[in-house]
Length: 73
Image (cartoon, rainbow, N blue to C red; front, side, top):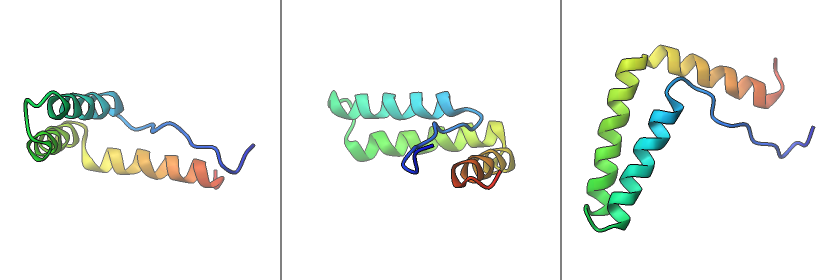
């Protein structure tokens, strides 16, 4: 019941988003890509994930999460 609690991101495809980010960070840290190149690649992958899942579906899931965090069930 703490006011400082943080919920896990619960949207469709969350594991795909996080995996993409982890891979991009690893590429930058290993010097395989510049940080900008790595993040540009992540952004491109995220656009593909959003296209597959659907922007409206993701927006609705995120909106539900925010309502849950705000206690406005």
